[in-house]
Amino acid sequence: MQAREGQVMQLSGAVATITLQPEAHLLPKLVRAAHTNDMETVQMLANDGFSIGHRDEQGMTALMHAAQQGHTGPVELLVEKEKGLKDKNGWTALMHAAHENHPEVIEILIPHEHGKRNKNSRTALMIAVENGSAEAASILIPYEKDLIDSEGKTARILAAEAGHEDVVEALDPTDDRGVTALMRAAKLNDTLAVSVLIPIQKKRAVHAGTALIQAAICGRVEAVRLLMPYESRARDGCGATALMKAASENHAEVVQLLMEREGCMLDVCGLPAIVHAAYGGHLEIVKLLFEKEGHLIDKSDESFFGKLEAKGYSEIASSLRNSRTPGADDCNDHQAAPRAHE
Image (cartoon, rainbow, N blue to C red; front, side, top):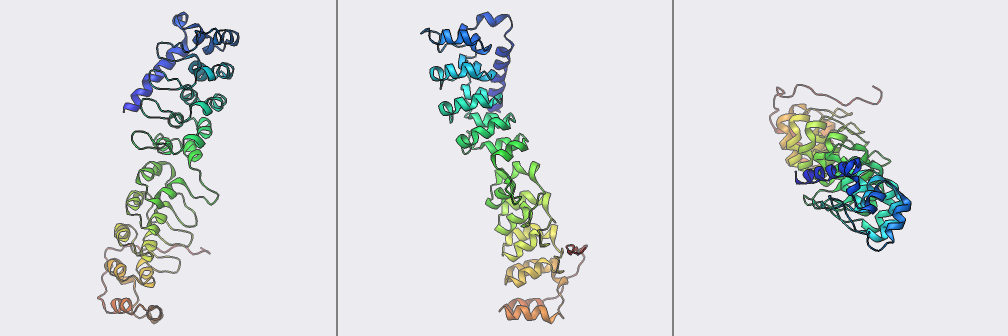
């Protein structure tokens, strides 16, 4: 909230200076010349020995005004003389240029002012992404991408919170395999990133599946918890669900989270998650899934039990053979993945 208030204050100041109504005569001469792109006056006053560093009521210098308006000429003349200064809200000239999305000005100012923060601990990149200034952001990324604000948020988080999908792509691009920022965050169990990226990147899939499936494979419990309302019952390129993957990888907590949403679903071979767990040798997962999916085990299938014995999973084979088969009352659909020819 504090950050927003600071931005509102700064924006109101910017609007006041942009308008330049009757109060224009009150501005210091160099400030007014820079704002209006009066190069002749800027050049004269920049070298007069006393005009440099003069400010308006918002604490903005001539360089800041030129940067805000996108006037590259005055910026080039003034940058060495007024670089690094801040206005009353802690904004530098680079921040003003980033807010207004002036890429040419940003290129001039970056070497001198990158990495600086305003009173709300925001950098020029953070200001650009919150404002949806993708072009400005793309220039600033190499300099400020990994910096965090006072709340521990990176520019990517701020861009996602603001719903600027194009800026998120600039900061954390989808790769040539289709892997998104959300998928990467899910695999790392970066819950803050997952929560803000869901609205703009949910339900996208690659051969390895959705973000939920990839989180399930890695056993990322909190990421799975966040994603499952949006991506449960999706499949990877082989027809496997997140539950099947979690069962195969022996991630009990993930299995517990997903079994009510994805229990009884079948892969392209007609196999439920409990069979994936059995083939993986995960007895505890088999027991966990048995109440939900035990009725899907064909106890007369000697081929299945023979494979378990051959893998050395005699205890699992015995457990499945001898356990009382539960009913299927809570398992209304045995939905199989579509086969390739369907």
